[in-house]
Image 1: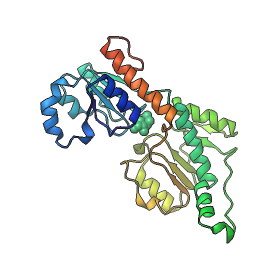
Image 2 (image 1 turned 90 degrees about the vertical axis):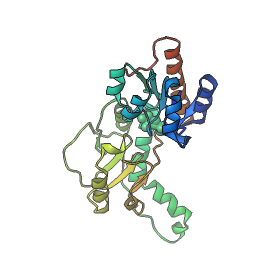
Image 3 (image 1 turned 30 degrees about the vertical axis):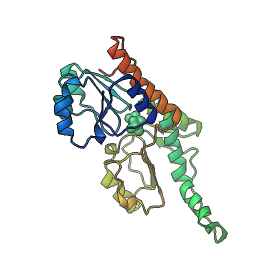
Image 4 (image 1 turned 180 degrees about the horizontal axis):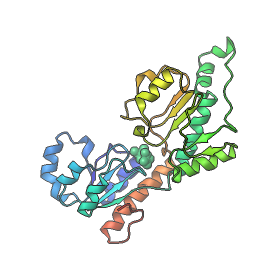
Length: 265
Ligand code: 8YV
């Protein structure tokens, strides 16, 4: 098994090492040399949101049978190439839906109610010196969701409890709007988002994902109306274990000729 991403989870690595010969591609200095010597023995790839299996890698692995991704997003896997080569692909849907939806609401509250600024205000001793600016109410605000899949629907259900009217897509320009991104960085035009925030054309943003992670546009660091997270939507102990169990379960099912648990292809 070749893990192409930086090890995303200690339990996943430990369990893979118990069952398979695991190569950690990320920490191999001479990747070309490694592939030359080991390409024939690699039958499975484990990837994540940061690295998967692109066309070039698939091309270099003649005996690749399965890509099991520690993610629900499949943007780092060349699905067309996998299909062409008859390579199976699995992912980790459902188990992370609640965490990502919870985080989206958390970001919404953090931006509108200025939770991070409030915390800094108390820690820095400012509270003793003056008043804190009033914040913006979340309950009842219109929520627009782009992408009404499993996670989008889970966000909609939570937003309903806050009595928010929900639309799943809107072309209307926002003035005081707040943008929350818990999907993928490239879903949003990042330079335009930064300009809109810097110029005050957008009310605020809560971002868990970025175009070129872990690089975050530095212009955002000084903005008080922005909350920045390091792609931790699914990052709870409970969910990461369920994701790891799915990655391993899919690999085991494949090598035991049983039906895959969560197949994409
Ligand atoms: C990552 C994610 O997989 O599931 C996805 O698509 O983006 C996350 O759950 C996780 O951060 C490990 O890279």
